[in-house]
Figure 1 (cartoon, rainbow, N blue to C red):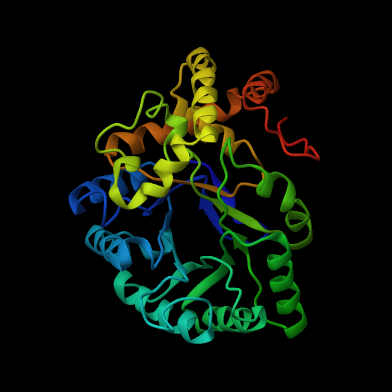
Figure 2 (cartoon, rainbow, N blue to C red; figure 1 turned 45 degrees about the vertical axis):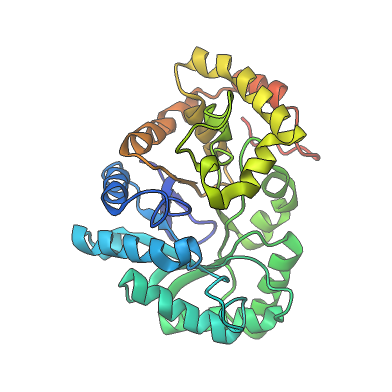
Length: 331
């Protein structure tokens, strides 16, 4: 396993990590979740990502139980949660000081932990002043309930405002952002955030590197039974797959097939390695509903060095979606 610094912090996270979204507490049972987490841990994964919203807190309960039963050394783990959608009550969602503090306490109880390493603001809250959110997140760090805090799906302008507020008020500012990033969703990481990497040393823990499974090729001929997009509560993802842009993306996935074949890898491994190639990516959050998927995902690390400039250009010719202005991180 390769370990990368989380932005400009001194914290090292595994280049590939394991996330609980959709799977833990929802798509797979506890024993399957246990097998997946153990496979990830045995491969050197130290970062396990979660959120209060995942399966309405059940994902945190399952992950916490697995960690407790495994007896893993706490200092070997980097555990996260995300705060925003905590329940139906009027103060159970958003980024008010009240919900941040109470939501984090509730997450820690479900995880059976004294602290999380990372806590994220799961989305921007347009109804709460950024200064209130920054003060509350800084307070969590000062209390030792979280070691670092960050954002998820915030704009560069919002992140910059949070960083400047922290500097001005002598508070702890955000260390990392968790954006969606994959072959089809690129502009935010490759263009919008570029100044933040230099100015604030922002780290990234990217999600959906396989575009909700699209980049595995399993949806090339429809939606298989039992797959993520077959789940009733993910109708919005199905609609995206079936619209015109989704069909165009599936055609690009088909065209990526020969590149993967030439490299002797799967489409999923190619897509993960492509994300890892970007030096601004601190860790790639992977998901899996079977232990075998975890094992296959981990093999993508060995592929990164084989993505030469020529191979990257072949991929670029298929994708045809490079954000402008270009940033020469492809080597």
